Length: 358
View 1 (cartoon, helix red, strand yellow):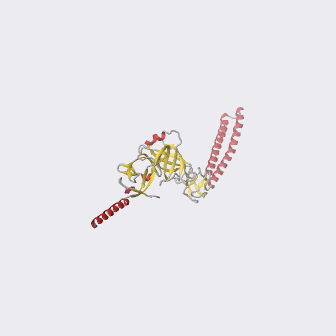
View 2: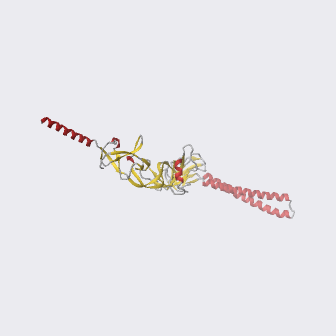
View 3: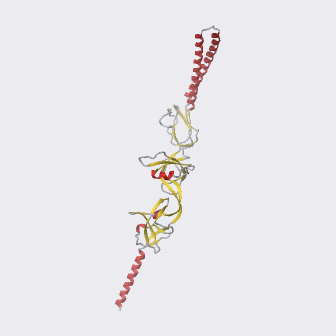
């Protein structure tokens, strides 16, 4: 009898240990419920921010740079005075040109009066035709000289105006290349400063030629384009598609596009790389799950679906689109089903799960 009791106690302890082991084998996981929502149909790419206009400011007159009237990195307006070159040599050239014009005007008046006087004399045969033509030729030459002098004055005025260098566009200045006191040359290869127009800006990106048909099917529809940080997250700027190149690059099989962003808050900066999403349409009642629920296996993508008995089922899925934090599922999961979002590495099709509460 005593032996029977001992065996029964051992059996009860073994069953208790087995039950405890089953409980302990449950895998703790976090879960989420598949939902339906309207999702945008997008073309995604990596884009590069480019200024709408870039100007290399160069001197058109040679001389000593006397003043710089802005600070590096300043915003400047079109027509704003940026640099001043010593104007004295050009003022002297203008004074000389004006003096030459005044001298030749006096000579021209004299030549014209002589030609008019000889016109009357030749009619009365007091002078020969040859003498008359000599004075008319001199008057014509004087008028031509006056035209050249006036052109010289205009050129001198233009050269003098080049001593003041003004901004051709609204934009932001870069680093100063030449400082006051240095000699600058007309049309030198080194610019004095580079100005970039940063409001608005372009974002340039490329898409595969296979997506061009989908894009062109929209015709003249205004296509919204969002710029997102490379690390993911919400859009940092919104713009519209403004340019589609006229040819596909045969080497890469892609076509270049540009989107224009107002960029009033300067969220985008020339040279910056961003993720670009061109919104083509909206797909209603799509099944979405958190992106981390989708796993990649040898046979493709899958998710773990939690069953009513806390078991799990490995379910192959087809992801049609990945958004910022969710994956759009075409088939494999229904709305309302519970999927595992964390802890998948410890799961097998025979596992039981313990749902962790946040």
